[in-house]
Amino acid sequence: MTVNPDLAGGRLTIDLGAIVSNWRLLADRAGAAECAAVVKANAYGCGIEPVVTALSNAGCETFFVAAPQEGIRVKQTMPDVRCFVLNGLFTSAVPIYLAKGLTPILDSLPEIETWVEAAKEQGNPLPCAVHMDSGMTRLGLTLKELESVVSNPGIITNLDVQLLMTHYACADDIGHAQTEQQREVFLSGAALLPGVPRSAANSAAILQQKDHEFELVRPGVAIYGGEALNDTPNPMQQVVKLEGRIVQIRTAKAGDAVGYGGAEVLSRDSRVAYISVGYADGYHRGASQKGVAMRQVAPPAQAAFNRTIINGVGRISMDLCAFDVTDIPETEIAAGDWIELFGDVIHVDDVAKASGTIGYELLTGLGNRYSRIYVGSDG
Ligand SMILES: *Cc1c(COP(=O)(O)O)cnc(C)c1O
Image (cartoon, rainbow, N blue to C red; front, side):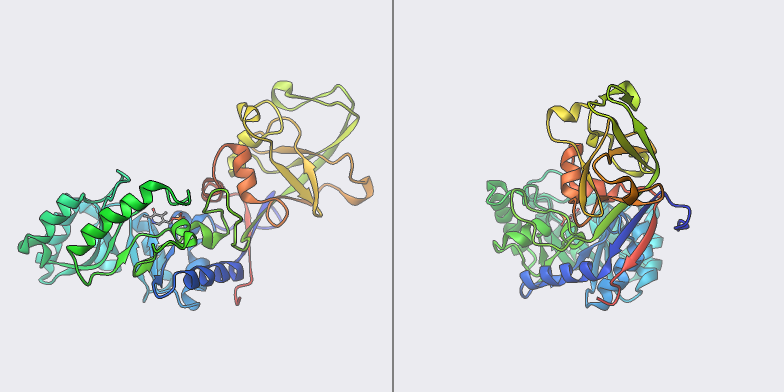
């Protein structure tokens, strides 16, 4: 859905050149391993079609999505790329996988059976990935289940296993013991399928540079500029800028109560800019200046006008939020102007922290009322 920029109260500027640079940096860090790209959740809010086009033109040949409907969009954009689907294989979806050329990641014994049945009907082994649970207790086969699959010729000869993958639970935490334990379990599983390419690393595991690359890496958030590793400077270029438009600037007196709950009582005569973006647009209520439980935990979100940092006022509402522009001269700011909610000056991960969440959730939760501007597409 595209939104007419003349109508939009909020806009997203997405730098495809930065996406490509980030992917190249990760590919470089991954050494000899193939660098795929995770484009689930509408490419972390950035748009599947433009992102797949840019990355495919930059040399990316393998994409991961969560759901088959996302995979269909990947294949429609770039028919020749390989597209793995993470989130399970429902029997009802098999004909679509076959028709669209999607490669399922088999996450359980019943899914393996479903794909083997399809292979028997087609008369040849079908491409797939096998997902191993090495200790996250989410999706995937246990080591025992993998052993049962590999030792059963009626099953394994009907599978064209293109990838054995696992997923780390704690890779964002450098040196976490669970990652090493999961790696050991994964290696035991991989020994059962010699010659099959292996994949374990998400963005964080790649950036750790601790030998998690194997034959293929699966970065997501770092491609989009988000923070993958905790407590470490983020080496990625910023990709997404979110701006909201000023609907009106109100003058108010010291002592006036602003917004829901009267949560903010002004301590001075003020000018308050109302922006046409709220929590229905994915700008979380938890990031409010005042009047939400998060304020006992972390500082509120800030914004920027012409690179000058400004503070919020009161609570973020569904479709509006407010910022204090008292210190910006009246001649320099007016209704219709844009305020950066995150981008070059305000980092998406800082807004996420103010909201009690992570950059991933902010990016994937961006609403559909924004107009979108793509820049740097030949980057
Ligand atoms: C989302 C996901 C990724 C990408 O993770 P990032 O932390 O965004 O790099 C990789 N592998 C699996 C299985 C995933 O679900």
